[in-house]
Image (cartoon, rainbow, N blue to C red):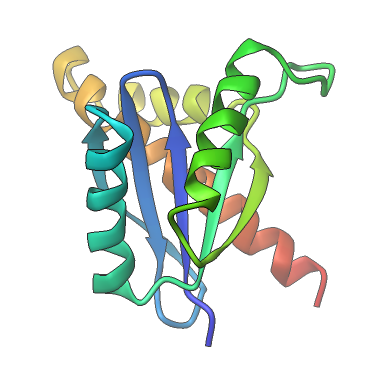
Length: 140
């Protein structure tokens, strides 16, 4: 059975979420502080091994009109390097507004600004994976 991991790749951090074994829900795992490709990939490989991940879902930050901007190009460059280091299938998922949704949820939960900064990328990854899982259910 496939198990999914979602990534919200930013300039300084990578939010990580994984699906439960039945691919019903997404849970935030951690926020990786980006240091180098080598270190990032080591951290991601540990998570892949721990959760037996078979597919990696990467959030692609499109502009509101659907076109790709500068940040999306950075993500695609990162994924290009991932392809040489991971055997798992890598799928892009539109991530428009996932960080905004995460921020709203944290604000509504009265989470302090400092704490929001720690968890927002992880929560954005949860939103990316939830969207992906829901899309799959709707196509069945």
